Length: 542
Image 1 (cartoon, one colour):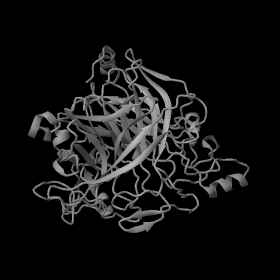
Image 2 (image 1 turned 180 degrees about the vertical axis):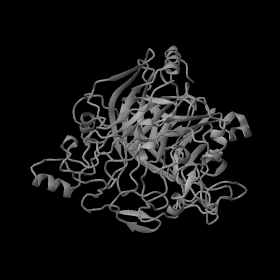
Image 3 (image 1 turned 90 degrees about the vertical axis):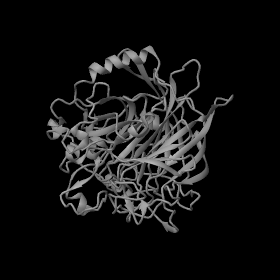
């Protein structure tokens, strides 16, 4: 539970500081220059939140298979079972990690991939020094795959949904008589069950410890896709539907973040980007206001209606990083619920290894001659305490836009206030990443050769390069009596199953690409571990 006086001071500060203001726009790369071994504090209303730096890196072996014979990987979400988390006498830590892949390797089309959970045992020995770390200090031991089964024991599918009713539930995404699941968010309840959110329908599934569905939550009416062509099925992501969508969750922008508050009472889910009615056009810089909802799990049937519903203002950025106006909103990719109103939110760009954006730009010397450099990848502290609660209003029951304006004038509708955030951890720290053998290189071999021919020396994209998609967060205690408010923040990437020796549904595949400017190299799944001070936060007693 949330307990310290420092946290109550923080509440008062956020109530005033977050009542107004606009999201920060990053038109050049947002890099952190804090040296290894040096803490970076952020003061919020008298409470000191501290990033004590990157202290660990783990890497999942490329090519490993799960119990269904498919390639492991793709950390769309993960959580550590805190009941298993231990500090050993030698200073190392261990516990059980549950990971959630999304919908399988689908670059060449959507596939019939059953949703599943993967279970690992992890061992972690933090490194607080400044010298290079020559091998990963977080290691994985794969233990088991838990296939998600519906209420009748059937597997789900990753195929595009074309129907919207099944087994008495509606509206839910369905294809060929199975629930269609593009899994993205994972939460562990104190009773050992899981909640799983997905993007097709912005649906939340409650599943048992073994993976069997126990219940589900359909999204508010405002989140349901609406099309100009009324004959289209409700949750399809087919381009013909996307082109005529006028309201609801945007395709591939459903519930990307999910967590349960430390007291086990409230379930929090957040869309990756703006609803269509809050950004009716395709300009990506206008997607900066995502919706976040809070459900009361103690309310029984009443929990089907959110008790909290907020706009969250995300940072915007310019993908070229050369100082021009913002052309994209940072995608919300995961959250940790610190309370029913306060959250850690992972927001990011889409540049990096695995993105296919590996071109050389001869006029972009300011960003290392990269056409698509890393611009923004950060974990934010977000508070909704001063934001307008949209629960039960026409903004939730219908398609009334909650956002007005465009580009630099984008803002909440008149009379509404959005939650905003303060950066706590910046992943783009070249010095700290380099200590663990990682880099921010994004240019493929063809571009590196062009750069050399023109007299420019640039680093080449490799499996050691930071990947594009960071989509998982977990928090575990440091169990340090001298620093009771210190936690390890685990940040994981989604590698999209990018390996040269992949296996999926009985077929082999090679996800690498050598096309100049679009190179894709093997992209390992990684976990970055930061030591952070979160005053007043306490993990649930499980």
